[in-house]
Length: 502
Ligand SMILES: *Cc1c(COP(=O)(O)O)cnc(C)c1O
Figure 1 (cartoon, helix red, strand yellow):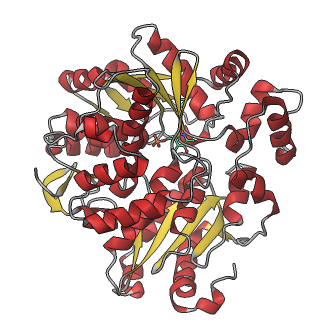
Figure 2 (cartoon, rainbow, N blue to C red):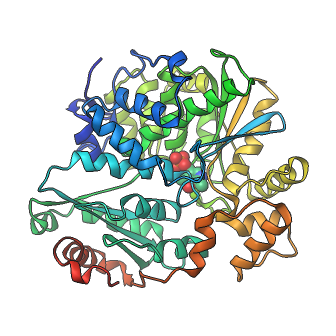
Figure 3 (cartoon, rainbow, N blue to C red):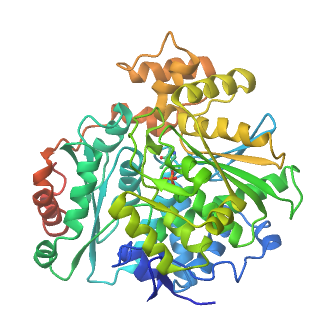
């Protein structure tokens, strides 16, 4: 098997996994992919005898071949030994006639912890002694805090998170502005998420800034297109399958289905990687919210982002361009990078592209796609709580309804991925199950009311966050973001005394 990664848009690119993690994405703006993924599968029987961390080590050894065994062991052990509140890391709960894979037991109560606890540990082994890296992240809520926790206090690394002032939930804001550590920086910007994102991209591409930072400090991103964040997510597909074998739901070799609430298509793509690596999966059920550009694509093969943008009660799925879908197009077009480049050029120039019938058919063989409206999300939360006593967050609930639609066609055992704790999006959940008490002004009280009624425990990090001191109060103009980056590079890497301020 080829040991190097290539670009989805140019298959003459050849780059090691370490370089791919350091760079994030290719110079041609394509994403790094492993050609021939699946020619050399994992030994399923053997995987089923392993615990989570050892499955992780096995998957990483396959997909990150230039990391040494010691580097992989060190990274996995650091990422998962003490930061999750479940020994299983991602436990599976049986509910009615399906299973829920709980991905929210990490330090920030969202599934992004699974990738963002491991990525920084891998990054550590990518940097040589005189390298320093500053991570820049624009966040609409969940990624920022998960990235801050992952990179906190790591040597030679710093992280700056920009979030839109007034554009994240009260809990998400509190989580970010109370972050500890000497290398973490957070600023609200006067603008929306797109402004933050656009300016971060401009800063990455600013050659003058690059020169000013010199050869020791480089900028990098913790975005979900980084293979160092994607590959850790392959692990829980294998591990959840193992849990179903252990509880007797399936026998080794039986197929299962997965339902995945989707935004940037990273989570569900990791599932497809698991299938290519030998996991017996029949279908991936992809669930969107009202931003359903993917659901429309699955009907006609036309991806068209020229459409209204909705702010929904499942905000982490409010996305119009699912970046990681590009990787699926690469595999489903027979690894045709020229074809993918043409599609992505069409998307950039016209806001849309159309795939061939063959490619659409190949995608539909493995994937089914649907969506939930906000009203359906609330109804699902209420239904599953009242019928089964299980409390879902709105993203998980967006998946639930699409899962139920699909189950009318196929009764293969089903695993629904739960991507956040219900307490992280407590207002939407409370509105669904205790409408009288839901109160967006007193979020802590709403959490307590919800816990009292449902007996679902509040995760420790979400309970503690109300008492932590605020450490990050900066609110800046979007035009000052670059200046802020320069100042924080100085503060984090060259002036330790100043680094605890701001
Ligand atoms: C990021 C996120 C998603 C979407 O995951 P993708 O990998 O972007 O498809 C779904 N739910 C929650 C809670 C998230 O934070």
